[in-house]
Image 1 (tube, one colour):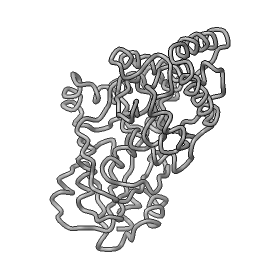
Image 2 (image 1 turned 180 degrees about the vertical axis):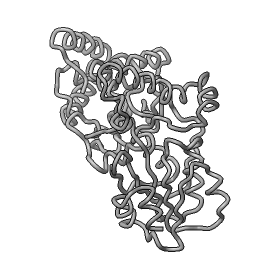
Image 3 (image 1 turned 135 degrees about the vertical axis):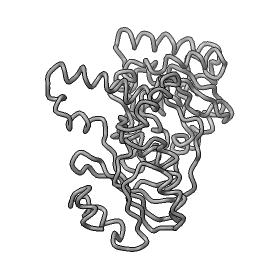
Image 4 (image 1 turned 180 degrees about the horizontal axis):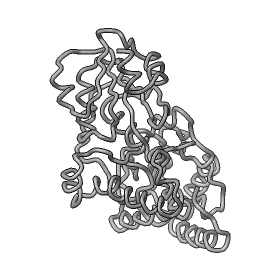
Length: 344
C-alpha cells in the first residue's frame, strides 16, 4: 500500500496521510477512482478512506462524497485532493506565455468553470467532458464536503494538488438546489425575526455558505465585521463589494417589501448570535435596509463602529419615526459621492 500511494501521490503525500489514518490497516480503504459505484459496491465500513484521484475529474461530486459518507462512521476520516484554479495556471506551461496565457485561461475558465453551472450549457458540457478536468476552487470543494456531512480537519498543498482531510460528523444535507448563478438569495433576519431571502450578486464561490462557521472558527471577524482572511471571496467579488455593486439586487427586496432603502443591515442568524442582547432586541423591531447607518454617519466599518451606528439610528428612529430615514439617506449619499465612502 505504501508503494502504491508513493507511486501515485509521492512520499510527501504518504507522510501527510499517515498523520491521520493507519494506511496499512485493513480498516483503511485506498482507491484511485472517480466512479461513485466503486464506493457504493463496497458494502464494508471503514475507519478511513483515501481517494488518490482528483475531485476535478469526478462527474457527480456530491453523490461521490455522499457515498463516502455512507461507508464511514461518525469521526472517521476521508482524504482526497483537488487541483485549484491557481495551481492549474501554474502547472501548465502556456500560462507563462504573455497575453496568450491569459487568453487561454479566460477560455478555459469559461468552458471548465462557468459552463458546468449554466443550465443551458450544463448537459452539453458533461456530454463532451464527462465531468473530467473541471476547474474547481478550494472553497467550493470544502463547502461541498461540509454540505455532505464532513467537518474540515486540515488541508495542505503538496506539489500541484491540494489534499484535504475531513471527518464524518453527520449525514449529508442533500442540497438539491445549490446556488451557482451570479444572482442568489441569502437567508437573513428580518423584522420580528422573520427569515427573508435577500438578493445579492455572487461574490463568493459556490457552496461558500457552508464554510461560514469554519472561517469564523479559524480567523474570527475582521475589523470590517466580516469574516477575516476569507478565501471564499472571488477576485471580482472584492471589487464588487467595495463599490456596493453586489447589493444592487436588494432593490428587488425593497419592491417586495422585505427591505427599505435605509436601515440596519440584514444579517445572518450566525452573526445575530454574536451581537449584544440589547441590540438583538432592538433589531427585531426594525425592518432592515439597503443603506446602513454607519455609511450615513461616516463611521468606520469595524464591528463596534457599525453596531454603535445602528444603535444610534434605532434610538433616533424611535424619537423621529418619519424623518430619520430621509435624513440618513441624504447624509449617506453625500458621504458616498463627496467623501468617497466605500464598503468594507
